[in-house]
Length: 355
Image (tube, rainbow, N blue to C red):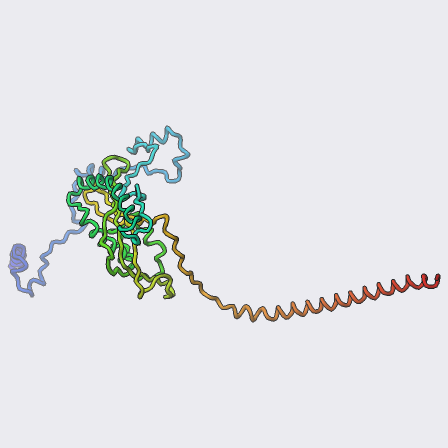
């Protein structure tokens, strides 16, 4: 009895003692974590109804039937049961217009620009035509300043030149992700066309003339509040360009020779968009400019040595057949000639006897 009471007291003592209070040896002998098995869980019959409501019977749809084969009334009934709205007869999708599809009121470059000075008659005429077209550009610049207060016609060509250099640099490096920040969605496929499997070396050396803005226009797309601005900048620069094909052969240009390049580049900005930015949109190629010669196209030579060796015995056989055919024809011609000669002799002999 004393042993039983001592064990009971020891158990009561261990129930109130925390595991950290015991020594490591005693702590390993005592199971301080409470364990509950499935059989020891208390089951109360008063929650029987609540457990029954946990399971909801659902009518599973028949995946084999086709909606097109069902009548219209049955289809409407099922859509109402399932809480589906009837489909609309038209399809609406949101779309975002980030750039225009081309150049509106494109600038017409004067013929001989970059070669004729202002002192000459043709150069003075070009200057006068430029002043005539300047009024519309001034109105467009005024419209741009209502959305962009810091827009300056004197500083913008320098900013446009930086965009121009960055766009061509990323195009030569084939950096598609950074290129999208400097060109519009219309200009991107035109710049990246036929660039695959080619090596491009492009270098911007210097500006022969400071870039200047020659044209500006603002237009609306779809709605009057959705405005786009296009500014044409004239660049007269010195560049180096060399294009190599996939075999490393030079296709166009040179990495040694420099060229003077005169370009009219169009920059566009979605001015109605608060986060819009100026990007390269297109280049104006005048009609009077002579067409460029296409680059030489290289092909891979396939040596047909095996086919030529295999074709030689066939050629010999064909030659022998031709010779045999020629001999047979000669024999036939000789036979016909002999027959004709014998027939002529037979016809001439009776006439001689009659005489």
